[in-house]
Length: 112
Image 1 (tube, rainbow, N blue to C red):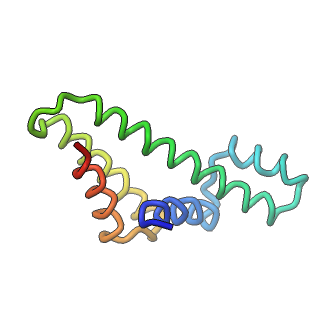
Image 2 (image 1 turned 30 degrees about the vertical axis):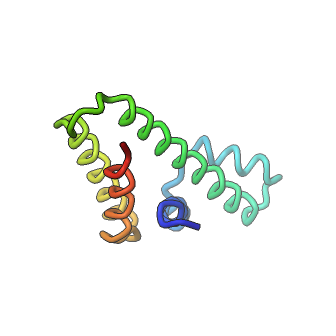
């Protein structure tokens, strides 16, 4: 498991711990678990991590579609927005450390 994936699991786990779940996703997990709480929780985490990964992929595609000149204010603004979102998650869930946030941002900064 890489750092990015660990952070995504941490976000999903924090959502479960704080009972701040995505209601539709929880309903799907609960339905597929046959009403078994432990299985529903495991499915929720699995589905939520998949969702968060897709969000990162979509964000990466948007950044990759920007002109390949020197980083523009738009790209840096996108990174700033992403950092702000992660910091909000950190404040909300008190889980993601500054080091983890920076490691994810480095992935985006290193993309051509």
